[in-house]
Image (cartoon, rainbow, N blue to C red; front, side):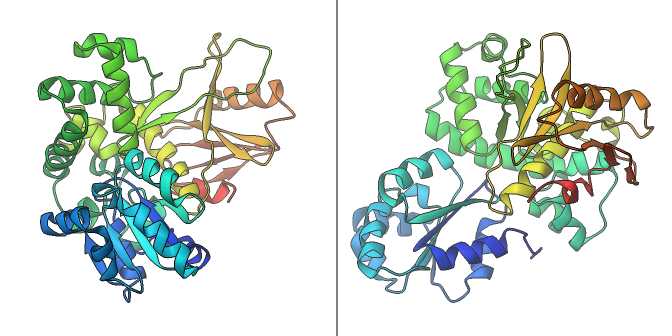
Length: 388
């Protein structure tokens, strides 16, 4: 098992709450993490048909098996269990009783809001961070990294990315989401997800996605929302400050992992990435995903944002730092160009009270330069310059 950065926060929350709920995409390592972290807790998995049937038909008897609590995997399969868990933890009045995991945050959020509000900490385990991966083996070059993605099985078991993500898409996305959405024409859903992959780093335009897929706009909205709640898609919101200029209000579309997005874009070999038109967008996706993991692994739900106005001024990522925003520019090229600093200088000059004392420029070159107001670094090291 690759040690996960979130483990320290997981243990801390277990001491502070009667229930800890760990969410995240399928195959991100939730089961491995909770079983290794709490080896003395009984373990049960609601994916197993007979276990699920028992929990559904006689929830009180099911939970009575575990008088000292348990690790319950895939709790979203029997969300009504949370009501019975609420009664138990309220009666016992102790912390560190149950650990729940789930891979569909919409179902979990609904159950938690109804039954476990105030009784559970909610943590999100995303695929491996680069910091975690390099503890296991040296990091590959950028194109290999984008192509492989950071799901643990791909990185630790040597599975070919094209095979791994084909299986992932068929087994989890098509099966689970088709069941949730009651999709009749699976080919339309497949097209929708592939079109999303082709729009990485672009503004979310549900009307365009619907038209290109051949579905209605409400259907596109529903499909996008479920993919987002299943930790497949990630919506990066625009900066919400009341600024005098006209600015873009639509969010930008990213995937939680580049490996799946690359595969959905039809790239089956690493070499195909070098001159691919989406390479820069995939690299941007990688960096933004790493920033998100950095905060989630420290138990911080940071409101990451981007900035763009209607005159073309844009900052790829804004990271909250107290009352200020740390502006981050992301470039996939190896050769540093002085023009890459222009947007950062513009932002700091335009919003001097909000942009703090420094900025970040991230690109793949293995070096770090500290200039008067900008740190130039790479995707493997930049999180050390983020607040936490």
